[in-house]
Length: 80
Image (cartoon, rainbow, N blue to C red; front, side, top):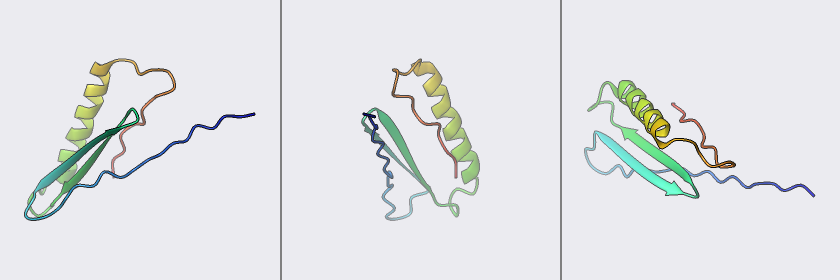
């Protein structure tokens, strides 16, 4: 009998009402952290640089956090 581990993934939504240049949503569930980012490129013309910097910082935090428990390896952050 094989055991299958269910993987649930969800989208973290940033509320976008009004003139918000950058919106972040952070959600932690079942040992996973999800970051959602919404950027108004009319207000933040260097949005790609901002997203790269955010990704770099998340990677640095993961290094500081140390090893992950066996069986709970987090996914690498993906960039659009």
